[in-house]
Length: 314
Image (cartoon, rainbow, N blue to C red; front, side, top):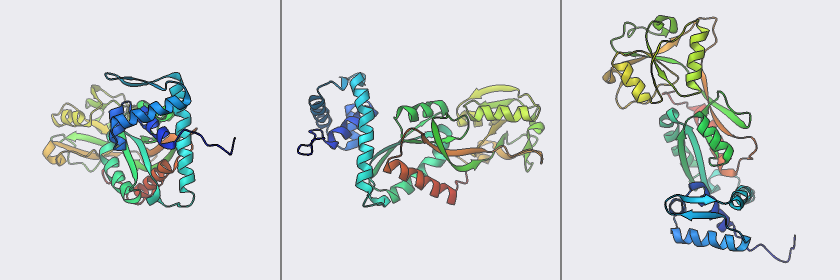
């Protein structure tokens, strides 16, 4: 390295390129960075001039498409920004000084109970981090973690790729959702054998759906699946009309009290010899990636927030 000269590339140009590549459009990158789209475009054009290669193809209808060089530069650019964060935080070490963008994911049904309290607490402790989040299902979020489009994600710790590391946050117990007029609506708890003859309104989203089927098999039962849905609202509505029962792994936040919606939620009774069929909610990130200061702060705050005061709706 020539110590008498310095690279013409700036961290600002790198930052603009990474945000544009991850958001997919100049307009969204401009919104995230609170800048004009033209300024983002000029910054990336200057970066392309210095590198001597086109990094992305800009189409109004399709947004940005990275070239092969752009994909290679994006990987190194992320690492460079992470290293810059590490250097900047060496003499600071406290969360109020952590800065920059952070994109996190959350398993769809966990969003209403995990994301609002987490965003509030993180904003209190890390006010200069610009957090964006995406909701999705199990496989989609794991793919996003591994391709680098999100930094961390809240997932159920079941069927996780070996390439992903997890930190357990809390446990979600299984429940039985019944219609208000069900014969067992007044029971303190309900076992799977108690509702073996009832049609199942199946929440069909792995890994929870996989765990529900395993529970039936462990009980020596075969569920009579009547309807399938990935929507808690749809499952709840079908149960309320008496179409069947549902097995859930959290108490979903509803738009009105359970009684008004025509359903009741009962803890799942299990034989004393059986292990509890809890599902563990974890925070996940790629094993191959060293967490940057922002993502590490997110992991730390989540661990503190939910271990000290787990949501009562899970």
